[in-house]
Length: 156
Image (cartoon, rainbow, N blue to C red):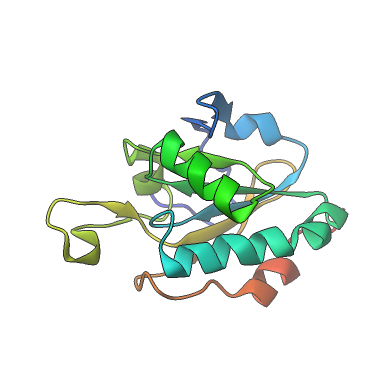
C-alpha cells in the first residue's frame, strides 16, 4: 500500500507507553504530525524526538498533535519518553505492520541480520485525516526537514 498525498490516512491501533491501545482515529479533528523513527535511545532518534518535543508550543498553536511511532516495545518507548521528557504519545509498532503500511522499513537495520526497524518518516494529516505531506528517508541518520514540516501543517 502506498500513502498518497490527498488520500485518507489508514487508521491503525497501537499500544502506547502505558500499554493502552491508541487509534489514529482518537486524534480526529486535529492536525497530526505522525513521526516514524527507527529506534529509541539511538542518537538520531533522540535528536528528532527532542526537536519535536521542543517545538510543541508551535504545534499546539497550530492545533497539531505529534505522535511518535517505532518498532520498539511499549516498555522501551516508556523509558525513552521518560528519559527525554517527551510530551506526546509514543506508539509501539512491534509487529511492524503500520510501519510497512506507511513509510516502509529498514531490513537488517544497523547491520543486525533479521532486525527490522521503521524508516524515519513524517506524515502530516489534516483534521479530516487526509495526508497533506509526507517525507520518508532511505538513510536512517537523516533528520526530517523540521521547517518544511511546520510550513505544511494546515492552518486552523
